[in-house]
Length: 170
Image (cartoon, rainbow, N blue to C red; front, top):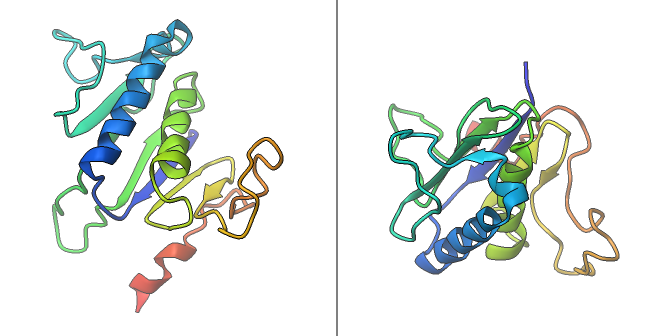
């Protein structure tokens, strides 16, 4: 068993969105407190890298100090289906709540709330704490200092809310 983060990516990131995402990731990695939580050589231990590059089509990290479970892989482009009915928009990373989970959740929230239009449901994030951020209502006050979570549409249950997948069942 373990703690997991989920994200539903219904479209590719644009080049400008990807630049913002890569810049944010690299900014996090400049801070020693965050850098030590991840292993940036998650795929190739013989040639570890110190930052993500704009021309890379994915960002991947695993846990560093404090342990690791699964590798977090964020793709610029929606993955190609491997079989009929493959739900390529569905992604997850089991972190078991280890320290690198902080980086994974920071990245997902940054993408949802800063990079993309937070009023749209084209990138949905959730985790096993029962939080699911689908969209931010345009009519609500977007000042995070006043209402850090009340402005989000959040599923309160521990079960993963899949209401956004209802259309597929037709």
